[in-house]
Length: 144
Image (cartoon, rainbow, N blue to C red):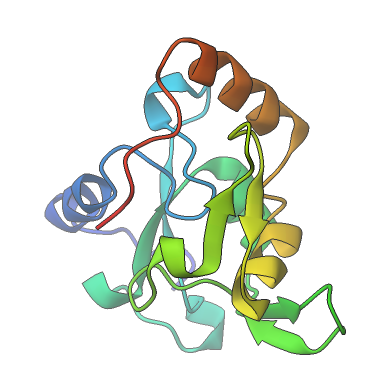
């Protein structure tokens, strides 16, 4: 299934549902150099399907860092925690923006594990957030 292609209508649904933002780091597709992609929340290698409920819109950075992970250590205590699932969890329940809106801060074990594992505060993202904030374009509206 490594070469499986998604139907264009399904890809469009996933992209539109995300409203132009990575469902993990909230990076805005309009301001990135690399195209976003459909990401399997539960990877196909772990039995995940290409159903609407298992797909997320992801920037290349988050997609590459997530790879086949579904969990990661919570940096507080090192217990394993599930990674954020944008289909079953609300972003605001697990993350907040730092006071200057350049950093994503994990609120829960899932949020903290996801921030570290997917490197949601990569240097390029932090710099872009700062520039976009100064232009009144960040943070993006909260996902539904």
